[in-house]
Amino acid sequence: MDSISNSLLAMTAMFNAGLAIFVLRGKNWRNPSNLYFGIFLGSLVLWSLVLIGFQKSESHYLTLYLAKATYAIALIIGGSFFNFSSVFPCPSPVSKKNKWIVLTVMTAYIVALLQPTFLTKSISHDAVGKMVMLGLQEYTIFFFLFCMSFGFGIVRMWRNYLHSQGMEKRQLLVIASSVSIAGLAGVYYNLILPSPVFENFHYIWSGPIFTSGIAVAIMYSIFRLHLFNVKVIATELLVSFLFIFTLLRTLIATTLRERVLDGGLFALVFVIGMLLIKAVYVEVRSRERIDEQEKNLEKINEELKLANRQQETLLHFISHEVKGYLAKSQMAFSSIVGNDYGPVTPALNSLAARMLDDMRTGIDTVSEILNAGSLKKGVVNYSMEPFDVRSEVDAVVADFKKIADEKKITLLLEAPDATYRIVGDRVQLRKHVMYNLLDNALKYSRDGGCVTVSLSRRANHVVFSIRDTGVGLSADDKSRLFTEGGRGKNSMMINPHSTGYGLYIARSIVAAHQGTIWAESDGEGKGSTFFFEVPAAA
Image (cartoon, rainbow, N blue to C red; front, side):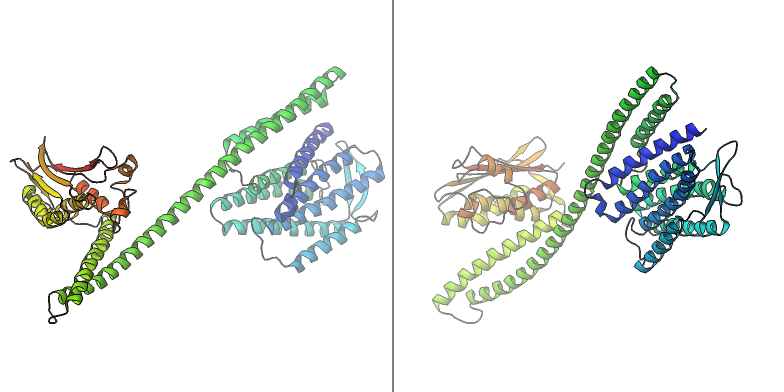
């Protein structure tokens, strides 16, 4: 039995030593959680090794002090876990005074253990193994100190669990559960049974093994692995089983040849197992980083959407206010031009006329921005009713005839006799689609050019088009047309008042009529043709 228990203790010591090195590597020890956890792991390593020495030692004097060492290490385990619980997952309000009191009392007790007759009186043997005669009073003090430190740590873990949420709550649940279960088992086998009342030391080797479960749970939580990741758990269970199997084969081998072969197999399993665990760990950590990046991107996206909505609201508010001031100025200049305040000088009348045109341009610009915002939000109401498109086209061409004559541009209308009835909002289509397309054609055509407005039927659709002899469109221009704020690269030089919203508004309105809008051009300087078609009325 001693050989099996010592083998298990040796494997437990190696396992915890590996965890301690991993936790404290580099600059990790500067983190209080890692530091106290590293001390906890180191104490488990010493506890396992001292118990091996206690069971194998044949010296009465050495065995006595090894027994004392187990109780000193138990206090260090309790104290390190108490301190760990005060900083994980975040610092708790534990005063330095209380920490120093606990540390001082435990240190005084450990120093007292150096006395030969303190706590451990003598060593005896029975048919199973060694036993230690303990002093009742000293043991009662030890029992109180250990339960106070370790028990308070467990209570704090459960309290933190109740006040946490999300991943942190899951971590604390695993730690608090494992500590409670392993703690109860350890108290029974390493405190109650070996006490002066029962004097049963047959199972003291099981304490480090139970406590290693706590180490594993804390290890997962500190490094924020997926606590219930099947791949990680299955890999570590498989590797641990192979470790134990190959080590036990090495220990029970009867010949030198078997020891060498089994020892080589154990070394190979150890190296491959560590590499496998590391690979799985790296994969899980990479998956966590990707998940965290995706969450961060989602958060940034939501923040950008909120900022965008706030900007749109602010822009809408400002545009409404500006439009109101422009409208008032327009009325004032209109009254001056119309002599509502009496006759004015020719110079003032000319200035008022120019300012009136500027006010109208400003109002049109603000209206485009407001309309684009309303269309984007989907708050535009359409008055859908049957009407004849031909009558609206005639009215639009008549309205722009004077502007075309001023620029010496020939304005033509081609509309074969046919039925051009559709169901739609005549005001929206006339004002924001037909007007916009014809206005652009005249603005971007050179003086002396030609603009042709056409109306035709294609299958069950009515097609409206405007062909000009203007600046034309490049492939890059076509990709930006009909987008929010999209303009041709040279549009600002020809039309400095362009907002880039006119065609965007036209596309939105045509789309609301289940139609399509597009542009064609042979290239820059070769003119362009804009089309839109909507379903004809039945």
